[in-house]
Image (cartoon, rainbow, N blue to C red; front, side, top):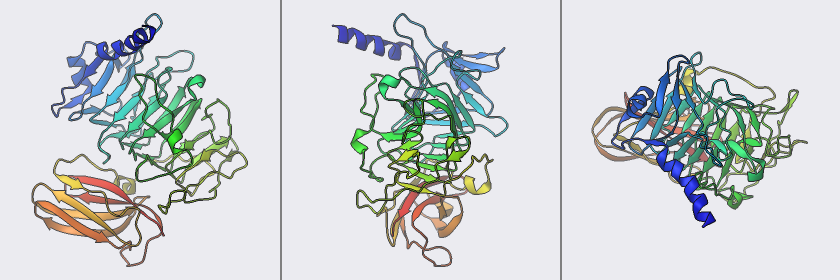
Length: 428
């Protein structure tokens, strides 16, 4: 009986204190939500949106949060069980700010002694093509006892670009939390982000599915020492700053518990140990699964990452940059009539097949290969295509017919208005 009562205490707030989208293919704005829910309102004095419920965006719907908007989630105080609200995305989220006018998700005045907690953003079974985008967002204060992750991705691959993830802690009894947690087949692209003021929390973590309503999960133990990049989560983390104030699972700089655990690729990232030094090691790469991708663990005297699929170009200092034109080339847009299939084989050497489909005739379609820095490598297709399925072979060479080096590459299918992006891995 006690277990039943506990389950009801947990589940009833989920049912009663939620706004759920219609699942009818609607694009919602925050102003729309204010008109549709008594629990969501615009605060004229604070110039922000006050939210007193969970927001669920279903499979066919999209939520748009505009540049400069502030969305603060308030806590429902109950005897024995406070309710912390957040975003639950089964469809699409587009929160696209600007460098000088970012979006704020969470209490803009939050500190650990005074502020409204919230339960972060959860992506469930959304598109793996990167339609959901968080860009120039400040994600602050996802710290309640069940909010183990500021951003949770399950079978989802959002683009998280130029965001600041800060002021988070997790309960030490749970084993800690993460700024971004990836489970299932999740391959988010995390670029130019800064992680700071994270306590009992690493920056990025890959593991098993987590039921955040029931608080159950085994924290990725199935992946320990075993990396399968094609079937398990593998985020690409490019040019990010993991600051010294990221302080691991036990709130101090303990070995391996600083930055990223169990998966992903790190390129051109700063991993701060303290204000004067960073983890610059490349580790000893080992192919643990026979897929040609080597897993590596830090060999620094105070190691800060473990079991990463690849680490290249580590930086000794943080770097803060604006968006440039080359970055934009590998940020996809939502599309209804272009379908880009995963290349096969993948990883590959020396060649791979890329297939795509169109549901209508296209006047001009391009398929271009880019490297991880957004630089053009080779144009595979340029021309008109009838509706149907098409295929092209990439031989792993650039425009000068020279073999490219091992690593991650993006292939982008685009028309004048739409594009899709996926990634391929070359191993030699």
